[in-house]
Amino acid sequence: QDVTLINPFEVPTVHEKATIEHWEKARDFLQTQPGYISTQLHKSLQPNSTFFLINIAKWESTEDFQRAISNMQKVIPALELDGVKNYPALYEVIRN
Amino acid sequence: QDVTLINPFEVPTVHEKATIEHWEKARDFLQTQPGYISTQLHKSLQPNSTFFLINIAKWESTEDFQRAISNMQKVIPALELDGVKNYPALYEVIRN
Image: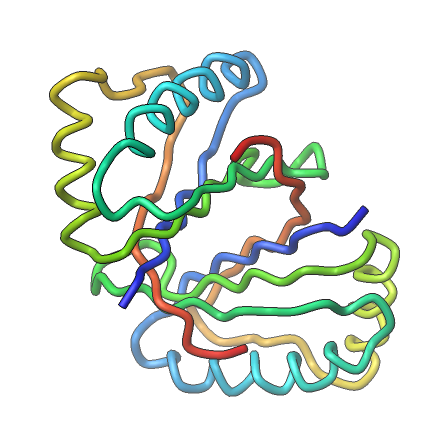
């Protein structure tokens, strides 16, 4: 049963470019991992929204996702920029 | 060019049921509005995530979405429950 990773990012304007570049590095690694299905990085259309970026990715299982993240952490350092905060969690669809 | 509404909800456990019921009322109204494409309500698979619910909806345009919301506010009272907070904003996909 596939799962959806939804990851909202708070991003100060000064760090927008660096955050997207770090996301691209992570995406390039994660898309090679077993269980990866797809990902879409969303950018807010409104200047003052709380979350400038929200990533939405699909994985075949929770275990696939967790294994991929732990593999990634061995080769890509975590994003550490002042004011950049994110809230990753796995979700399932309950209503349409 | 269609847009994506992403709306994370902070929901205390005691208000989970009432929040979902209010979401269903809003969905039933919004899906009748011009420009509505689809919606998916996501529930967190992890107990301690910041956002228990995240709604992801597709609309044909920003204007369609804004008109639908203002129409809805005339007939459905806003959700006001202690500790329930949400962060709706419109997004576009910038990377896959």
